[in-house]
Image (cartoon, one colour):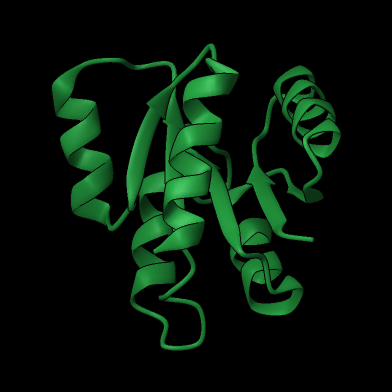
Length: 121
């Protein structure tokens, strides 16, 4: 079973995503801020990460850049999630090292396609 780490500070978003993805057969791990997300990436061995960009303590852009700079976890695919749908936000997330980008509210079928594509690569 593939493990998805959801790094999201909004409890309702965390709950909704985790329930919907676990129904699709994924094991779910959760973190509420960028620091906890990095620790979970190092200790939890996720197959992929869904990283909110607007996080407390360490934002998603910084946490993503830190993850990609760390040899231990740099190969874990990260999908950036944000309510900001501007092209500049997408470019900023990809420049930080995110492997893909999606907007909130999440379109589950589109997100699942991105997850599956990254897990196969």
